Every structure is written in structure tokens, then in C-alpha cells.
Amino acid sequence: MLDVRGSAIAVSYIIAAVLFIFGLKQLSSPSTARAGNRTAAIGMTIALAATLLDRQIISFWTIAIGTLIGAAMGIYFGRTVQMTAMPQMVALFNGMGGATAALVSVAEFLRLTRVGDSIGVGEATSIVLGTAIGAISFTGSIIAFGKLQEILPGKPLQFPLQRVVNGLILIGVIVLGAMVVMSGGTAILWALFAAALLLGAMFVLPIGGGDMPVVISILNSLTGLAAALTGFVLHNQMLVVAGVLVGASGTLLTLLMSTAMNRSVANVLFGAFGATNSDAASSASAVGHTVRQTTPEDTAIALAYARSVVIVPGYGLAVAEAQHTVRELATDLEGRGVDVKYAIHPVAGRMPGHMNVLLAEANVPYDQLLEMDQVNGQFPQTDVVLVVGANDVVNPAARDDPSSPIYGMPILDVDRARNIIVLKRSMGHGFAGIDNALFYHEKTRMLFGDARQSLTQIGQALKSA
Amino acid sequence: MSQELVLGIYVFIMAIFVGFEVISRVPSVLHTPLMSGTNAIHGIVVLGAFLVAGSADSPLLHALGFIAVVFGAANVFGGFVVTDRMLEMFKKREAVQGEKKDA
Image (cartoon, rainbow over all chains, first blue to last red; front, side, top):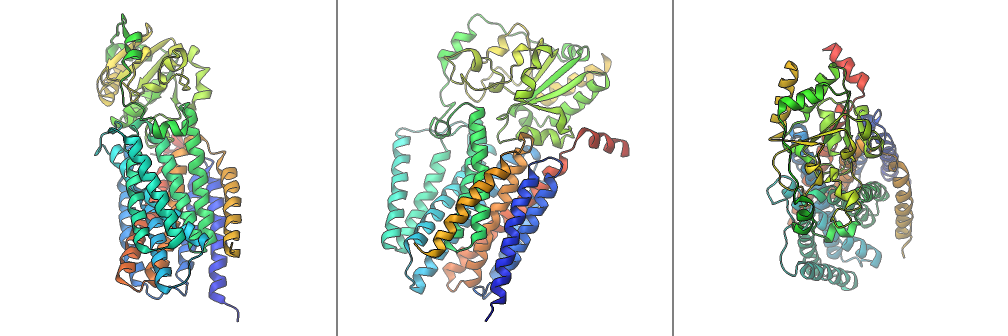
């Protein structure tokens, strides 16, 4: 007899998979991106509704109550979160997805064991990998969330023999996984789950805040992979497709971000970058140099009489929540006939595209935002560069000083502009913990203080200029 | 290897190619929405949680299923809502100026 329900589910899943792919395609252009997100959401609705038809489901209560609570939480946080807090929000949702994948894998193993079915090697392997990767992604994301939310220190947390300990945990996870595949046993699977949870936390702890764009991308890709593996566990091809799409996108972003820092993914994960202040590099460039300070009034005049201004935002802009203030200043300048552009470094901020989101929130049109390759050729013709809370991404040492730890990282060549004004809280080091020769450059003026306050003062001075 | 596993691996490999092909042209302006949008999509594992929670026959499986459904649903709903909020803000210069005139 024809299985109407089974066919309906299968067809719905195919439609959902197509909608996911189509939605992602639309996400790749700013004009269709919003529709793309909605297309994917429709795919999700169809897939979830179809799943409820599954004969395996005998009780709807747990599903209904769980979905209500989860949806209420998700919608509340999604609606109320500040745009500056977006990196930690993404990390948190990512961790929840990882946890779901791990729990589903564990539960399926328990169910199969209890029913007494023999679990094939392929199935057992999928369960082991789904559990381990999901769990790593969960605790890794939670630690990343803690660092971004500043519950945990953003600096790398290190202790003696850290790599050895982490290596041993990794070996433990692999051995336990092999044991589950070969001989089964729910106790061993729980042990694997616990070890993987520990591993996820331990691998993110030694990674510094500025490397977060790479870490978040990796975690995103891991959760996608865990979801795909759950698809193998449940023999559900649509889960495989959706999970792999996310895995591919996360991998691509990971590679883009590490390329933008000129570092390998392994170096980001195991380098504990920024843990030590490289005194050698800083003393060499700082000796005998002086910092030239400026005032909001002088800055306003420099900006008002410029023909072209390029604003370079960094993480400091997000911390000071100065995106609206900087846009107001830019609008005033444009009113005076100044050509204003924004230069966005790929790893500025704490997640891929972080600065773009903040500036979009402040109503900056996205065609005013220039990428590194577009803008670098324009700096020699730029009258004033205004650096707002960016540091390492404008450090000329990355280009000129082979002894610098960040040597080789592509930077914004702001030192080639005619004048440079740097808004900064203090002379503290950037995330990489190294000195920035730009601050001692003869063309550079430093304006110390909270970025938002400084920008407000410049704006007021501009009105009387 | 079971037929089903082989099919799964086929789908897995094809999806990798589709994924890279579709996403490789995303401009850096959209990296954050791409990440949070795909973040919502991997929330699809919640359907696995539905199956677990709906077929649970022991208190432990009920508990596991319930937690998984809550986390998964938060991931899906939160992910799509936050991405939509973000994308609503992305505008071209004409659109931004047009809006100001309206206001």
C-alpha cells in the first residue's frame, strides 16, 4: 500500500532542502538577503511541520511545551539584543544547536540500545561523531560567549602543560569513541559526551578575543557538521543537506578570516596569540618616539577643511557603542561637501562582518563601506583618516617590520594618508599586545578618551567651525 | 556498508559542492548575516529532537528530548529573528535618503 504520510514527509523535506539552498543563494546579495532569510525560514517551517507527521511520534506534549519555551526565549533575545552584542548572541545560538545535535545523538543511541537492535558500524560512528562534535561546539560556544560578554577575561587563559592536557583529553575522546563503535555501552557514550564537553571548553579558553572572528566561524561550521551527522544517525537526508550547507559556509568564513590575518587556522587555535606582550618588538619601535596629542576642536577643523575623509572603525567603536555618533559626524561632514567613506578591515571587531552590521544599524548605506582592497589605493589621496578604536589592523609593522608578530597580515595602509587622527581610550596595546608605530608617526595626532564622547565633542566643535 | 549510509555519503559530498558554490560569492558586508542565517538553518536538528521527544518511553529520554527541543527551538527562532532584524538595516544610499525624506 502506498505510504501517503511517508511520501508527504519525503516530498516536504525535498522542498525544504531546495528552499534552504535558494535562501542561501539570496543571502549573497544585499538587495535580496532579507528575502533569502525568509525563504530559509519557510523551508524550516515546512520541514518541522512535516516531521510532526512522523509515525514514530506518539506524544506531542514534550514537543509543544519545549518548542514554546525555546521559541519564546529565542524570539525574546533575538528581538532585544543590542547590535553591539551580536557576536556573543551568535555564539550562544550556535552553542544551543551544538547541544541539540549532541543530545539527539545520545538519545538515539540509548533508544537503539534499549530496543536491542544491533547498531551498525556506520550508525555507531555517526552517533559518536555527532555526540563529540556537538558537545565540543556547545561548550566551545559557551566559553566564546563568556569571553565576548566579558564574563570571562578576553585574554588567552593559559596554564602549564596546557597543550599536553588538551592533547590527552583529545586522545581520551578518540579512544572512548572507538570503544563505543566497537563494543557499545551507554556508560562509555556518556563518558565520551563528558570528555567532549570538557575538550570544547579547553580548546577555546587559550584563544584571545581578537581571534574570535575565526573561532566563531569554526564553531559555526562544527555545529553544521554535527547537524549533518545527526542526519546520518536518523537516516534523514535533509538534515545532511542543511548541516553540510552550514558547515561549508562556516569553513569558508574560517578560511577568509584566517587569510585576512595571514595566519593558519592551526596557529589561531593553538598559538595563544596575544598572551605575551612582546617587549622586544615594542621597545624597538617605541624608543625615542613621541606621541602628538590633539583636541576635539583641532580635529573638527582638520575634518571640516578636508576634501576626503576615510573613517576606520574597529572593536573600540563597538565597545563605546559609537556607531550612531560616528554616522552623525559623517553626515555633518557630507553636508559641508566632504567626501566621507568607511574602510572596513575583514577582521575588525569580534566576528566576520561585525563593523558592517554596526554601521548598518546606524543607517550608514552599505555602498559607503569600502573593503580593504578597494580603499588601500585611495589613502594617498585621502586628506584625513579618522581611526576609531582600531589598532592592529592599521599597524604598519605588519607590512614593514619582519620581526613583528603580526608581520604579513594585510592591513589598511592608513599611514599613507595625508593626516591621521586616532581616537583611542589610552596608549594601551591592541589585542595582539604589540606597539603600533602608527601612533608615533609624524602625521598622526592622538585624541584620547571614550570614542563616543570624543566624537560628540568633535561634532559640537564642527558646528561652530 | 548499508545502502542508506552510501546514499548519505553521496548527499553529504554533493551538498559540500553546492554549499561552497552558493556561498563563495557572499560579499564581506553580509558576513555577519550569513553566519547568523546559517546559524538558524543548523537549528534544523530540532527535528531530530522532535523525534526523540515524541517517541520517548523513559523519563531519561523524555528529559533529553525536552532539553534538546528547547535548545533547538531557541536556536531556530532566535537565529531567524535576529538575522531578519539585521538585514532590515542594510540599505543602499538612495533607500536611506528616501527614508529621511519620508520622515
